[in-house]
Image (cartoon, rainbow, N blue to C red):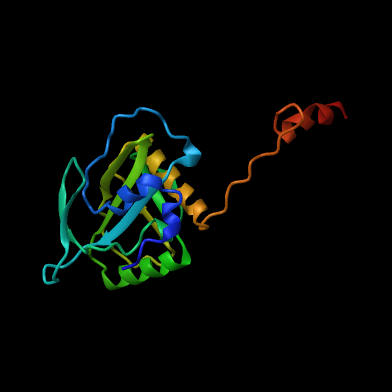
Length: 209
């Protein structure tokens, strides 16, 4: 569908190979390292595939959701990947939490066209993320049903992962979005002369006025 851009390899290092080979393997890679990765350096890949009909040729069968496995025949190529994602965040729900993705303009068009032409089919969402240094995890996270056209460029789903894993996924996706220019880099607060935030440094002066 789309070639993997060279710029991705500049920040994915060896992880880029794993991400590209997300190849729907669904297995984890764990060399045994327990060292944590700094949050601002985490990266994650995320691909969204759409379900194929029985009459469609080709496709690949995958199993989504570990507790109650759902077998789906999906299109081999994802129609959306991390390059189409502007931001990700965790949304608290009554029963737990969900992940909300906001796509770029390009991603929004793809999501709208796909959801309009394939209403009634499932999506299959897979991600590879860093659990720790030299330790990655690849898993099919969700298989939401396309009930209505998605026109606002947003997709919310309940992932098959722990809250801690969701934090790694969301952090990694947002870091990638920043690195490729889909999202602005957060501005770090200015420090005062004593190393505190500038607002804290000015507090004694304000209270003395």
